[in-house]
Length: 289
Image (tube, rainbow, N blue to C red; front, side, top):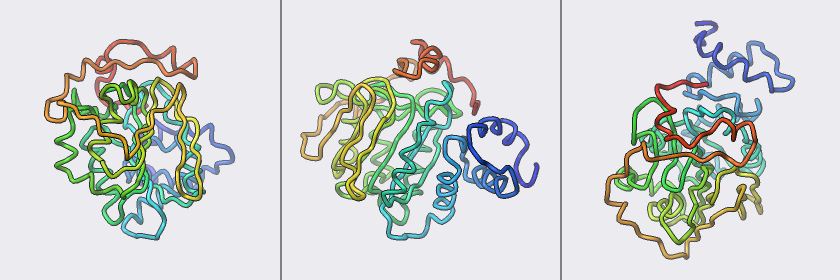
């Protein structure tokens, strides 16, 4: 340990902070990183230091309802492809639009559920972000574990319903999926966006990418989100739309080895890192970086 921070934690992450400008690597910085480790945040370098300060403060004072609308953000615990979830300018946009952001990292579907329940213990969420490498039928959190638990998939209805998670989002709240292709097929076939619409019927809008790519833009009017844009197009599920039913809601999901990730549209360096082999073949044991 060094100043209360494990040496491994520092050595594995410090070089990622090189893109931060005007960071004073002093006691204050070490304190910030110490708080991240305590909060089980393995990717503090995803954020601007000021945003990270806000994240840490909100997590440490989560029991306080300060009147701000709540945005809960759950990102994956493992990003083997590197840098995919560092496009986080919209975190600052959320703060500027008056949101209290509660950020978590999950490695499994159960950890995702636990994070949302903890974040909404004293106030329901107005906005839910779910991030992870994805396909039409799954979002991968990719922490330590094997097989199905690494994914939120179309067979997780029982897990989500029994957890009581559906009650933790406000009426007319919204969900943003930052996970490739989770809106593929739109309302013509089942996908993660339609699946979540069945779990959260009170949600006004779900925004999901129809193809591989990044979340590019959020447009607000006051603190109300009116549009989210993804590379390659966005599938928008409305509250008023009929909920697409699926027998998968009561069935066991297919084996994780069947999930294959396409390459994101950009940057090119990331696309070159991805292959069409099953994701489970590339995960193995947990490795943060």
